[in-house]
Length: 183
Picture 1 (cartoon, rainbow, N blue to C red):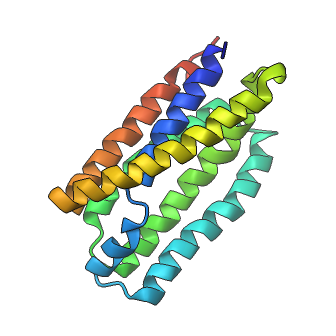
Picture 2 (spheres, rainbow, N blue to C red):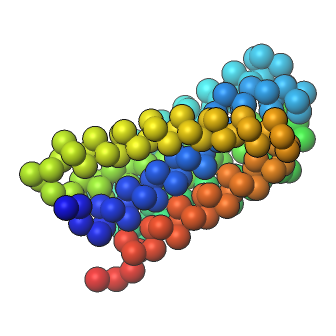
C-alpha cells in the first residue's frame, strides 16, 4: 500500500505532467504560428532546458539547507500554473522566450523538491515500485496528453488548449495541498 503523502505527490505530478505534456510537439507549431522560425523555436526550448537545469541544481542545494521543500514545490507548481495561462498572451518569439524562462524557473522550484519529498515519504521497501509508478505514469500520461493536445488544437484552438492546460495545472496544485498542510 502506498502512503497518503506519496500518493498525493504521485497524483499531483501525474496531473502536472499531463498539463505540461498537452503542448508537447505542438510547441513547434505554436511557435511558428506566432512568427517563430526554426532557430527561434530552438532558442526558446533550449533556454527553458538550460534555465531549468541550472536552477534545479542551485535550488536543490538551497532546499536542503534553508527552504521548506513542501512550500517550494507548492509555489513551483503554482507559478507553473499561472505561467501556463500566459501562453494566451504570447504574440511573438521574444514573448515566448520570456515565458520559457519563467517556466524553467517554475520547473526548477518544483522538480528537486518534489524528488526529495517523494524519496523522504517513500517506503524504503517499495522504492522500485514507487519510482516505477512515478516514471511509468509520467510516460503513460505524457503520451495521453500529447493525443489530447492534438485533438484539442485540431478541433478547437491553441487558446482552448492553453486554458485546459492551465486548469489541469491548477488541479495539480490542489492535489499537493495534503502535503503542504501541517502535520
